[in-house]
Every structure is written in structure tokens, then in C-alpha cells.
Length: 248
Image (tube, rainbow, N blue to C red; front, side, top):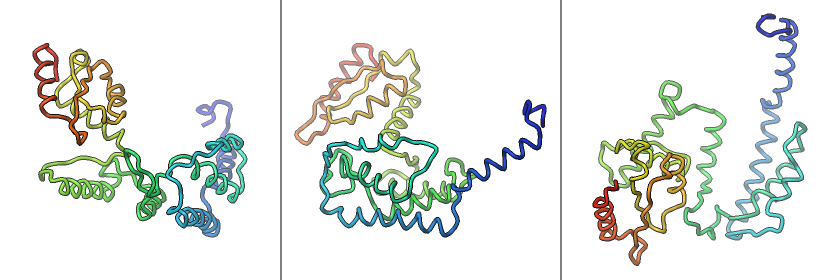
């Protein structure tokens, strides 16, 4: 052991481990401290929910969260009340009110209370859902949810998928899946063509870059009066690109 740790002997190493154990104990609070932490968090959420119907869709505060810069991350903690007040003033209040009825963005926010409680339980139990062996229950839950959504959309029984953290990661997954399904390699990217409309979310172009397809050519297809891609314009663009030796 002494040889493996250089100049650190067994006794010194054990003392170091005991010190680290004591230092990490605040991360494992007991029942009383958990109750105090939980009560403060629930009280903050209730203050928010009681006024959510009257909040603005966008709060253009003067500081724009700059008050956080006066409290940099450090080794010394702050009081719970101070942290909660800072969170409500500098994080929750400024910017878009994504949980309000006045938030009319391209992609609406959720803010569903039942989902928040589910997130809490998932975070506390910390089950790993990436592999069936380590988390058979979470994996089955995900498969059940995917199947339910597939049925709502009308996909066939053989359809499958996975739940992503958001639209950006889902778009990246879809684009990489399409790239692999068509057997595209780096040498093909410069002659490959992607067809979008001006209403396409910016995450599509971002996904092209992350997937290594920044060289792919992008065609902007006209839309109809309901902002849908016009099939006739798409067919014409595809035919033109194919005749030019490109790969739609």
C-alpha cells in the first residue's frame, strides 16, 4: 500500500479517508435536516405557484440575474434562507416565465407539478436507466411510455425509440440515425443535401455540425399559408439535386 501511494503510509491513508468521510457527511443529512431542507424548498415552490397566474410572460429585470455574480461558488456555504431568496430573485424571476400561461414560445414549457415530484423521486433514488441489468424497472417504464406515445401518434406496433432530455438531443439522435441508415460517410457529406423550411428550429443545423455534417448542403423549401413545407417544391428540389449528381 505504501509503495502504491508513494510516501503515504497505511495509517496516514486511513486518516485521510476518515477526514474525507467527515467532510462529506453534510451531503447525507439526517431526518431532521432533510425535513428542514424539504420544507424550505416546498415553501419556495408554493410561493411561486400561488402567483404563477399573475406572472409576466417575460420579466425584463434590470440586473438580469447579475446578483448571482456577487455570490461565486466557493468552499464556504451560505444559509438556507439566503440561498432560497437568491434563487427566487436572481434565477426564477428574470427572463421568460416558461411555467406561466403567458409564455407563448416556439416550444412551451412544462412546469407540471406531478412531473416535478416524479423528478424528485427519480433524483433521490438515483436509479440508472441506461442498461436493463442495472435498472430493469426504469427501462420498462421508458418502453411503456414510448409505446403509449407511438400509439397516440398512430405508429405501427414495431415502432420503438427512446426518451431524450429535449428537442435538441432528440433531433441529433434522429439525424445520426438517418445518416447511419443511409450509410453516409465523411466523403459523402459535401454532396449530401438536407431540406428544411425557414420555420425549422435552429437545433437542426446545430445537430448537423455535431454529427460532422457541416459540409452538407441545405435547401430552404417554400411553405404554404399554414407554414407547412410544400411537397411540390420539395419534389422539384430533390429532382434538381439528383440530376446534378447530389444525394438528397
